[in-house]
Image (cartoon, rainbow, N blue to C red):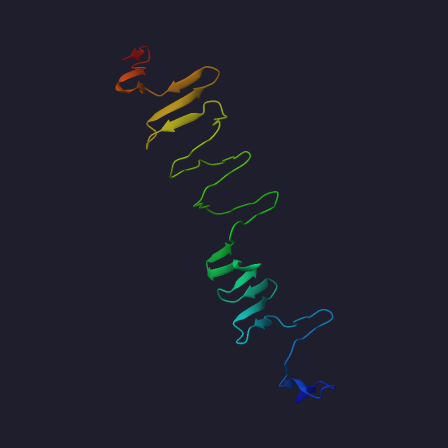
Length: 192
């Protein structure tokens, strides 16, 4: 059926009921729960319903298209600019507070990284630019190796409780290549 809802005091229409839809001219205030009882129910926002939240059965809520969930003002938001990218944007800082943050992906940092505490690598890290260490660098295992060169042709190897071993007949050079110390064979040490 169809009908009109009236403000009984003012005698003016405040809403209509047509083909199973209730249309109100003003605000709706509910004193308790609101339940959308169908799967894929939609909450629309805006004069032309440009923003919507859609129920995804047994999964969650879907914000439409590239719309944003904003915090404090329009400069801080979460949105998906495409179907493969999720952006978290803030004007100054994004703070994660947890015992552990687990990142299961490649990590790309275009700014400065400041780390406080111990950094543990369980695989070989690869740096494509300079690395600056403002304090100590410790290779914490016996027989640790420090490699030099694109193909690691020069290396320093830790010899436990003894010293450092420069590989093969490589040279420790001073000033230029004409002045060096090298083990030119297994029994000869050359100082040139």
